Amino acid sequence: MNIVTDRLKRLRAFMQREGIDAFITPSTDPHCGEYIPERWKSRRWISGFTGSAGTSVVTHTQAALWTDSRYFIQATEQLEGSGYCLMKEKMEGTPSVCQWLGSVLAKGSVVGIDGWVNTVEEVNAMERELAEYGLTLRADTDPYSELWTDRPAVPDSKLFIQRLEFAGESTQSKLARIRRQIGSHALLTTFLEDIAWTLNLRADDILYTPFFVSYLIITPDTATLYVNKEKLTAEVESYLRDEGVGIRPYECIADDLAALTLTVEIQPNKTNYATYQSIPQVIEKDSPIPHMLMFKNPTEIAGYRRAMEKDGIAMVKWMKWTLENVPKGGQTELSLAAKLEGFRREQPLCMGISFESIMGYAHHGAIVHYDPTPETDIPVKPEGLLLIDSGGQYLDGTTDITRTLPLGPLTHQMRRDYTLVLKGWINLGRAVFPRGTNGTQLDTLARMDMWRYGINYLHGTGHGVGQFMSVHENIDLHQFRMQWRPTPLLPGMIITVEPGIYIEGSHGVRHEDTMLVVNANFAGPDGKAVEPTAQPYDGPVAEGTTFGPYYTFEHLTVCPVITSPIIADMLTDEERNWFNRYQHTVYERLAPHLDDEHRAWLHDVTRAI
Image (cartoon, rainbow, N blue to C red):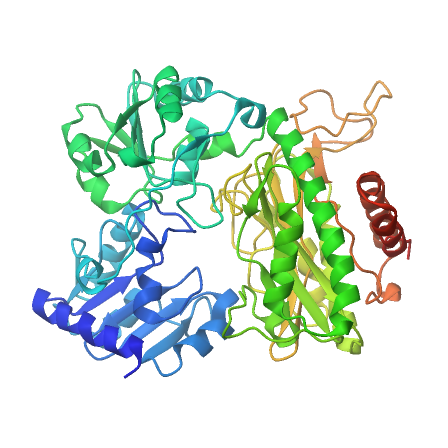
């Protein structure tokens, strides 16, 4: 019997005993994050699907898994023979979870979820939608505490301080700013990103992401961190006392919330339903913290620039090594990923990688979020394309970069796709736009040339990146995406640009940089240029412009793009000139830090086209 079918059998027995007709397992934990500790990877355990996003739904006779376009190919392979049916999200004809349950369950049936791993917003929406089909939702069931017998424990890595030389603002200052926003209320923060930023603390509870499992309650007079005692060093305990932060056991959060006499603010899409139910007086509203951490201070921006430069050095060494060694034979996707990680770890202040490297050779490059494993690892040959999406964690910044390497002979289609993606990357990456513009309005710039060829991609084109935090930061706020995201792009925000083309069974192409929103460098009314800094400019608009100020992007990433696959005639003069300036800047920034051999190689690959 397949291990997944055995687990489904045990889950169904549990459901039968508990009077549940269907059970929904999301990909989240009590802290509503994208990247989660092993303990809460229940959806992976019950389905066998290892992608980061997906929802398992199991009835007594059927099982289905919903995931997005990044994982269609991967999920098809991993669900084969498991008893699961793949539901392709946002594709025509695919029902929602509740629509599907309404079609397969009888009226009066009970749908179970674990309130600790579903948000308030999700539970409220599910209750309303299921009620339309005569179905009832129960949010008090966790079958995996019983069925998953070797379930990992709550992680217990030690907390450490993100020093002021990297953070740029003290915890006391951040707490004071938060208190001005919440007034006489209390604020419950369950989102680990927000807690790490507020307290200037980091840990290793989540692979590649330096967060720690905890809750934080901020009142007008106090701040209390709910965290397991074994995670605290004497230094961190002393630091928290000095910053005015108390400490309580992690498991006391629900009881302490129940005893609070203050009205508590919670953000419904970032708070689990179980803690919400414990609060006597509650207000649902957006937390002020994500909007604060979205804008990077000068210290953080300087750190990003240093981190990206170090990362560029590692990438140059790896690119040169790969292009020279793949023709010799013996390399695989995993060996190349390990080599790149080694080059990154040579750099000062490197704490590891920021996510599992997406090293997709040939047809694996068409799997948008492909992570090579010993089972899927394949030899890399001196032909075709290699897509590498990777990043590093440095104390002074988090990096996220994608390059596509030509390893040998390419087809015309590969070169065309490489060039189309490059055009999208250039045109969005050099955009100039007035205040009030959001990422959805700019997203078209990355896709318009592909659309002329009848090609599209379904993932977002850009996301926030943390400062020694999550590689996907504030993913529900500022983004480049076809779906509506109203948050305007303003100076001080960090965002990636990463268009791609994916041809199943053949190849994938993606180019990605991390960028900083800055003021556009126009000549002002006095004839002097407005400096392209990341600080908002509220002075007079430049002469000859209207309805400003205007903004643009500084490319923080400094890494060359290999030019040999480019079909130069497909580029406009403006695109070509911008690209040549970009390549020249990469050389100017990195060359002083390289030995003669690598400097000569970089000089050759950054020649103007």
